[in-house]
View 1 (tube, rainbow, N blue to C red):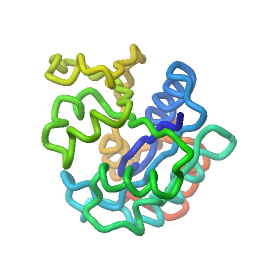
View 2 (tube, rainbow, N blue to C red; view 1 turned 135 degrees about the vertical axis):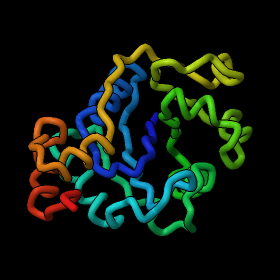
View 3 (spheres, helix red, strand yellow; view 1 turned 60 degrees about the horizontal axis):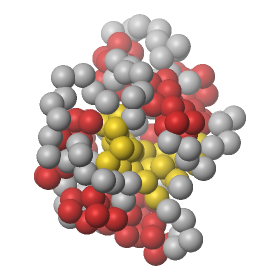
View 4 (cartoon, one colour; view 1 turned 180 degrees about the vertical axis):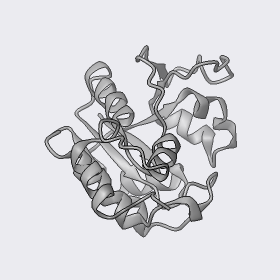
Length: 190
């Protein structure tokens, strides 16, 4: 089974990698694909670095991790990106592979707002990362939902962007290759 970890990754950070590593090891995934989303329907696009740069940051972050792959699969799909459409495309392109969705528990609580969420629940394993203060909802007990007891990591991309803008050196919060690219390109400084 291949885990799909969707996100803006603006930028990717060590929290993303730690979560991904946990899911590969404890959910016994063959691979984990980081799907760089051009536009999350619930986020404003103007806050994002251009798609290519975010993909490059993710690609550099994942070097030396053979089970992790960076994917631009959504770049050629209609925007805004809907998970259900991307999954249908992946099923068509890779019919021999089984895909599971990795989401945060906060997203599980708002899953009813997702396009075709019933189909996602019916056809996919949802591997869920716990979040603090999330109340158990209607989907927690679904047979295709697996809430893993992963350590909780309190790092966010917005924290990193703000700190860089403030002139802070957060090189240990971002994988080395990704940090070098962010630094060389002067991203998030303005």
